[in-house]
Image (cartoon, rainbow, N blue to C red; front, side, top):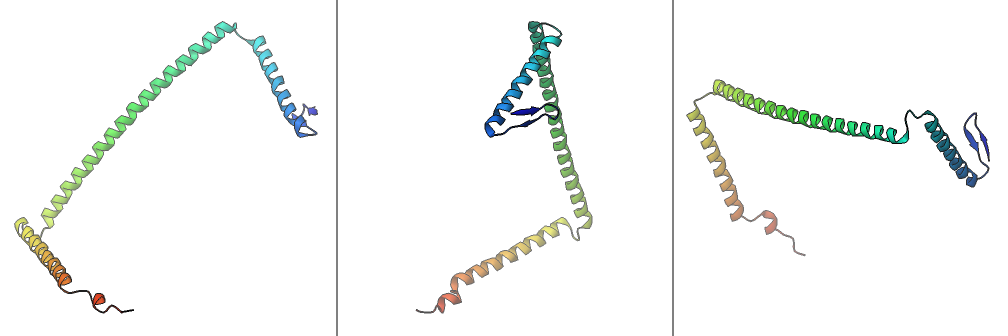
Length: 147
C-alpha cells in the first residue's frame, strides 16, 4: 500500500490493505498526539488531571445553575401566560355581558320567558315526532319484498 502524504490519500490495492492503512494512520496520529502532549504539557500529569477535574466540576456546577435559572424562568413564563388567559377570559365575559345588556331588545325576564317558550315548543315537537315514529312503522318494513 502506498500513502501520499501531500494529499493525505491512501492508494490501496485491495480491501484488506485499506483497513490496515486506516489502522496504521490512526496509530501514527495517536503516537504524534501523545508525543506532542509530552513535549508541550504545561504541568506534570497529576497536576494537569487535577486542573481538568476542577474545571469539569466548575462546568457541572455552572450547568446546574443554568438549568435551575432556566426552570425558574419557564415557571414564571407559564404563570404569566395563565394570568394573561384568565384576564382575557374575564375581559371577554365583561364585554359580552355589557354588549348583551346594551343590545338586548327586551328585559331579562321577558327574554328568559321567550327562551323557555322556544325550548318548550322544541321539546313538544321532538316528543310528537318520537310518538309518531313509535306508532307508525316505517314504510320500508311494511313493503318488504319477499324472496
